[in-house]
Length: 346
Ligand SMILES: [Fe+2]
Image 1 (cartoon, protein in one colour):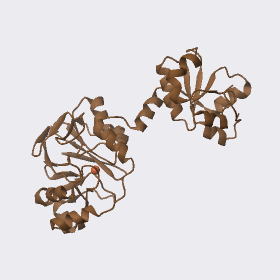
Image 2 (image 1 turned 90 degrees about the vertical axis):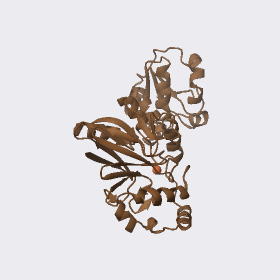
Image 3 (image 1 turned 30 degrees about the vertical axis):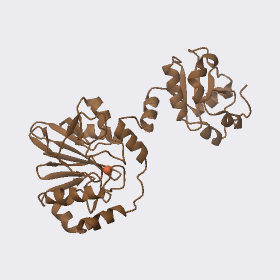
Image 4 (image 1 turned 90 degrees about the horizontal axis):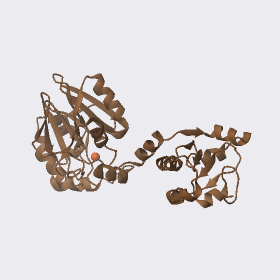
């Protein structure tokens, strides 16, 4: 059995491979680590056959859907998962066959309704049900302290104490633990009376994870994150540096349209000399009047360089094949002492 751990921030993902057959499963992959998973898979001579999420994550962006498209392999979750893009929904007790390995799902609701632990040989991946020295929280959507109590005390802690535990989160750099070790040392598991455990879980007062709304939206629907929208747009457009544009304007050789896609008040407060105003929100509706030559070079900018990237992508999709995004934005332009013009659109 090959087992690789990928740690990013406090999140853990696992690549589990069968040495004999080269088949593998990737557990709890994160969007920002896709290249790392594929590099590890190649290095170890493995082929990913399943993309598994132990539960609907609220604190990071799952990579299962994107990798499924890229690799043509199924996304696996518990049958209680709300995500519409899941290909294989496991019920408790069911197995995934990964070459010679058998990965068995154990339904362990509590942290979320669709939480599952996955057992293979002497290893159990506990997702956010059981962490090292802690448990998953139960105060996020779908969380239920009573259900977590049942999952832990009636199921997980009844597994072989020698099983090695690999959780979905670890903040102190420890690699793993065992069921036996957690039973004796995990402070939350010392609270063995049901009511006291539920009270403790309901009064943890932990801060909300960052991006919780976006993580739940994208992980539950399969929709894109803001970073994905931006990186897809950025990959499809060329950029121009501020220095290049400044040099063109200074030499009087600029024959391109410099297009400001911010709102009118921001434009009137200060814009790049000679720029035209066409707010992003009106772009599609006004292009036919405002930009009559689709072959004309258009240099698009906004305040920070993000909205202009999206606008340039839209323009290129509409046939403005010479649209370019400014690398940076009005903020950097202003701060680097470049000339600024105030007042209305000429
Ligand atoms: Fe979680």
